[in-house]
Image 1 (tube, one colour):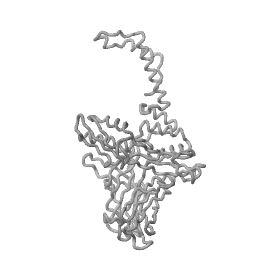
Image 2: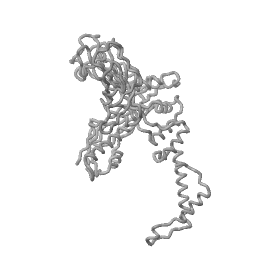
Image 3: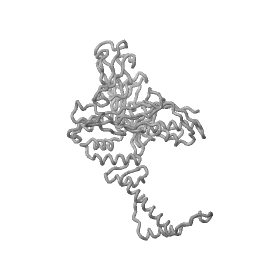
Length: 473
């Protein structure tokens, strides 16, 4: 809706049109006669007033979701901000071979891969490697996976296109689009992360206002704006500093600013370390930890919960690249035979936090008086169950749709977004055919009852498929 100029003659034409317009009600029924002296002028004034109101909303960005996208794009471009077209999907694939390597085998950057073609849609998602990795013959045993009886090299990949359509599940990226000497197969063990759709009006307006609030990297809001603008894997940012009650480092670091990040880039790594003994923490060499995949010493594979436990750091530097997540062998379980025996820990960590820390440590991004610590936001796991009554339509289809609506709504929420029953009711009511939905449980996982869930600014809500149960009644 461009705000174009309307001349005197244009207004005259509008008024003439109003005078000459006919009211079908007058032609078919008895009623009030149209006032040809007042009504046409009133309609034109209303039309012009609506244009002024729209212009006011455009300038203030109030009700951004109702603005014409092209108009909003022109406003934010004044600050050289462009609407995001979406982000790529990222995961780790494993190039594998049956025999131990006798020479070093490289995987180059930008090597093309793809998912297996969907037999129903004929669709295939294209990926490329975004790093160069090499399987070294001298370290052959470290690549061996006893579960698959293959030698595997992990490499990070990203989709060629952007958006939610690039999200794929585990074990779907299996096609090497050209021959790669030394490897006979490839696969991804985890689903992709990221893969964001084009930015909405409200998201664009929020980013624009954040940019205005802090245009300099030397301020916490400026740092937030720069991080969101330049790292597509970052979905949301929250900075804690000064006398904020959520700051955990105020007594230890002058100028402390904790930057909480929603987003992840999972990478798998193998850490070889000397066994220190029972009940002694073994901190991992990359932080923060996502999950332990395996712990092996010699021919023995140890079992989590029986032989060792995963220890999550809860201190002032937890969830950062300076954290102390790790494992600890348990008394009474199986342990390596001797102190200082080699232990190989295969684990996955959030490399995004490490990337941000390294990037903003560069001298040109130094902010005087601000000690930034990038930390991975905590997930709050939600549990939901309810009873669905269908008024019309296919009950199974409507049930599936309701589950999808609830899951998408919760998992799209950002940092500090509360989960409220009223908001979920509104989303469920959008599904055609729903007669009624009765809540049985709406709580943090492990809890019970039905109630709104408060989420701290450094947390975000999420719900797993297994924790969302909807029954038909």
